[in-house]
Amino acid sequence: MAGRETKEAFVTLATNDTYSLGCLVLEKSLRKVGTTRQLVVMVTSGVSEPMRNQLTRVFDLVQEVNLLDSKDPMNLMLLGRPDLNVTFTKLHCWRLTQFDKAVFLDADTLVIQNIDELFDREELSAAPDAGWPDCFNSGVFVFKPSQKTYESLLSFAITKGSFDGGDQGLLNLYFKDWSTKDIARHLPFVFNVVSQAFYSYLPAFKQFRQNVKIVHFIGATKPWHHTYNTTLGKVTALPGTGHDSEFLQMWWDIFMETVQPFLDSSLGGLVGE
Ligand code: UDP
Ligand code: MN
Image (cartoon, rainbow, N blue to C red):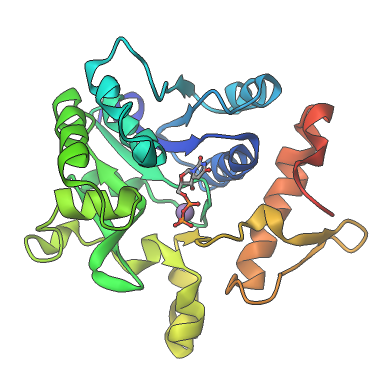
């Protein structure tokens, strides 16, 4: 056990200030459940200076990732494939080789219960995607940082591409035996509960919702897009997003209590009321 606290990390990503709000809530949710591991956020040039300052205050490490760093020959190969830029940004997590193991979490995830047990899993562990359960959802995954794997993933991306244009299609092709090889690499669904689940199998959702460890607000509408009534302290879920109002309220309670009061005034306009 000695040293694991410093050699293992949760990693998230923001390419702009709005996704950074998600990272700030995620950070608080992880602290709230008493994680003992390091918290890392990767940022690109799209994140403003005041937001970086805020992230620096709460994360253990803010790692700048440069999309088109000409000193990196792998990145040079990207110049011809601008379509894959966002995909590649997530892949930078494999370069955090100061850590022995890490868990990537999308900025639109919220941790409800302690998930440090994930570090007992091997690369690549992830939960099934609700839309096609033979694929894993890449919003939550356990991985082992390695420069070699990073380069291998990049050249794979350049030659084979991604069948959905994003990181999920790419990672599912690269780790293609995930669905059949080793059940230990299948994380239980409670580690990445997406909003469709609330609709597609409501009785299961009712039965097992107290076991949920991570909620993932997938889709174009994110928690910060919903309307929040400051007088009542309640969020009104936009129709048709599938976001559960109780989980959404949890996100907003953390945001209003522990994130919003500390935001630089120049960042005030990021969320609507
Ligand atoms: N992301 C980002 N900026 C963007 C889009 C995505 O920083 O403009 C990061 C962020 O961490 C986000 C993740 O990439 O959570 C995956 O995108 P998203 O969660 O929007 O995809 P979904 O889960 O809805 O498929
Ligand atoms: Mn997501």
